[in-house]
Length: 490
Image (tube, rainbow, N blue to C red):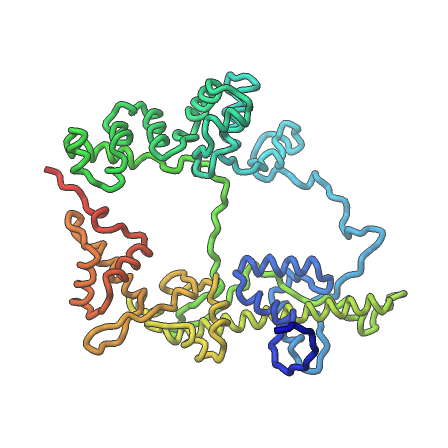
């Protein structure tokens, strides 16, 4: 068979996504924080876009003007001022004397211009992390330069939990030190605050913390050294038999071990907590539910009237080239599309929450026990959208309801069949029932997964497999029955 090149014509249909449509889809799936960052970045790159923080309704007004038929896009708010070339910043020189120490007591006898008063900038500090805290202690240690290099290397190789991930040989090779120096400095670092730092295993970290409490030779220290696997499995009978200690003494030592920190480095973690801000609020007022979109913290977009007047010819700009005019027109279209995309995003989120409110009305009224089975296709058919759009809208979006704060994906649950022809239940309601059963169980005789299956079948006519119960239990972070069993004191 010979190979040859030849030309041929072919007619085919192909769906091509424009950059504007790609942007609209990308905005749809962004979380609230990501959307705010994206909009802020667009404001910095597009001179036609402005953030009008003084007018909370500027976005709504701009959207109304942009979507009005037969009208040119107009700005919501005042016209943008022209730049003064003599003073580009547009601001007068900053008078640092205005930054008074307002935190000081007004009734203080010290005059406000007292040079001994601490400056406002003296209290601006960053949060201390683990590395800074250990290096600060290292500076006060009585060590030479070589030992300080080893100490800094050890501190620099600690993970966020405070564990050391390199061996003594690797430390010695990297710092060109002897094994004795490495062992000496490592022991010094392990004696620093917080206790249990620079260990290579959980067992070593617990032993260091017990040594800090002068409990190395106690029963707790013996259990950690010799019976840690049995402690993990809660095999108290094996511990009693192997150690010779009575069960009461083993349980008392266990309480001491529970008070230790398995992640000592996290005490000085510099990670800031990330709080969830809902995208939508659902309130119940006068017996009816009201949906309110959360626009707090979002940039208030408007289109610069200054650039619009340039394009309309209302502003006389000498030497305005055609390329410059085309550039402004392109940025204007980009700004218009961004505002329209944000409007469409908000409208879609509202429609999805409205549909969820209709399907899961019993949940909003009575709680998770009354969650109904629901899939993406149900909501997509209800609001005439594609399932992929619903999936994007419900990703990383949160709603505040009378029952609490939930991700929108929480309302979509698979159906669990019931015997006797009864209506199927949502998987989330099954989890609630399982959690309630386990919380009410006898701690000395915890319910096995098979026992939970039988109780659900007898009391609620729920047809569910044992492996499904195990999966739900693991998703809720509940231990197996053998780990939930409480020991009996003889």
